[in-house]
Image 1 (cartoon, rainbow over the protein chains, first blue to last red):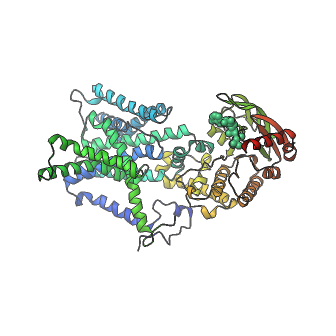
Image 2 (cartoon, rainbow over the protein chains, first blue to last red):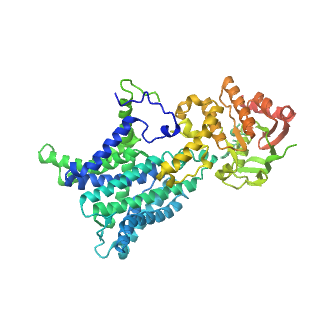
Image 3 (cartoon, protein in one colour):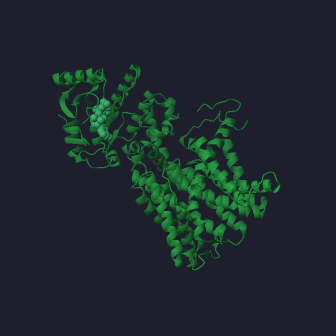
Length: 357
Length: 259
Ligand SMILES: Nc1ncnc2c1ncn2[C@@H]1O[C@H](COP(=O)(O)OP(=O)(O)OP(=O)(O)O)[C@@H](O)[C@H]1O
Ligand SMILES: [Mg+2]
């Protein structure tokens, strides 16, 4: 067996602090990276464009939110608005002639500035009130975008993304858009993994667990949480911009509405709070399960196995989907990531039943 | 007489109608072990919470090394050089012993999201540098064997030791311990006393310790302050203060009450 924990001894601090201390994990990461790079060749354009691409971008968005919710323990019900700010800012910047690379950063900065301002207000209150404050952000941003034609793009309230190129690579082809999205998601993944092993990530975890004990060793709770808001908002803004340029091609306010914020929260919860692999699982689950369920029910109804009215058929997936989320919250609060971890641990110590640590 | 490191001047604290501290004045001197004793509910933890900034005193003030700290927020006071442990262990769940102790280095670190973005060239150096100090403290408190365990699975006695380690990692000049030996058996108590004395000696700390075990108090404390119902009833060298008639009365009264 090559997939084993035993026999691994680290002899220096840096070695013990590697991202993937187990060789088998490094192999896995390498394999997944290779598959991701080869995806445009392996997967048909239809699947690449309508499944893999949005999955990657939503994963980056879910990871952004998970920074705040998972690591920082701060609920945010207005994260779609943060993404909207990034998307609209970057589009307007490129329209004004700013190169795409800088427009992406600009979108992130705009989202970070506005997101942090709301964060500063929200952090004055706790729990349910924090939720209300972030909700207020969602509705305020929605309102401003819809009601200011200069932002929303005029009467039809759709704003097309201009033709741009990323590092000389024109974003016209699907492959180019896929690689840009992949690059961003990989960056987010590495960043998230690294945050968890720096003093910033530990300070966040400490505040989430016991804020008084964190304060007594010198962690400034307000400043640290605000930095979490800033970081998450920046990442969310860039994710929103990537979503607009690489996937949607044109944006409308509804694409970043309240229900999208709820979906993002669901991605983080179902995947597993503060888990990187959970971000991938959660985004995949939330995007795919409704589609699968719709097809399944349509298929069953079509074959005459079950008889459902048109109306019910439209709502059944939502019912199932809601039920599954509640199921997760009740039975596996640590999400899909925990289930994956259990399976992995099982193989790590196979043929024994339990791991030593 | 050596100088006062920590000085409480007429400190008062109310909780609603409860007058938990009634104008307490006291001072802890450089390098001494100062005991804070008294029956349950006498205000010991409250006084410590005033010093560390959790419950700022409503009257009076507190000075550390000659500068006023009352009114500052807890994390500021911590970075001024005061570390503490809690009566109920307050370790971070989900982290290993090592990570918990590493948290103690926080005031020397630069908690910056950008450091994570450039991890190999920025944060990694910081991590490794601080690990050396952490390993020293782990050695001092003999925690090698549980270094990589999650804190919630180790016995309470060891958890208290980890909390002490975390406090020491901040290289404080003043260490405040709130009942570090509560719930320990005789052997664990002896270990803990040894570690506190070692730490105080090697690191040149001033120590403020709340303790219920009177044998421990009389054997390690240079001076003590006895509180009863928010009042100071005695202060002075440990043995003298503990045999003060009023202290004896308060303790017997307290015990009779508890029984
Ligand atoms: N946060 C609070 N809110 C209300 N009352 C409080 C609070 N903290 C302490 N008190 C009250 O202040 C008084 C002193 O409590 P404190 O915890 O300081 O006692 P203590 O000497 O540490 O006791 P013990 O030996 O049981 O730890 C008690 O009457 C307690 O009920
Ligand atoms: Mg107490």
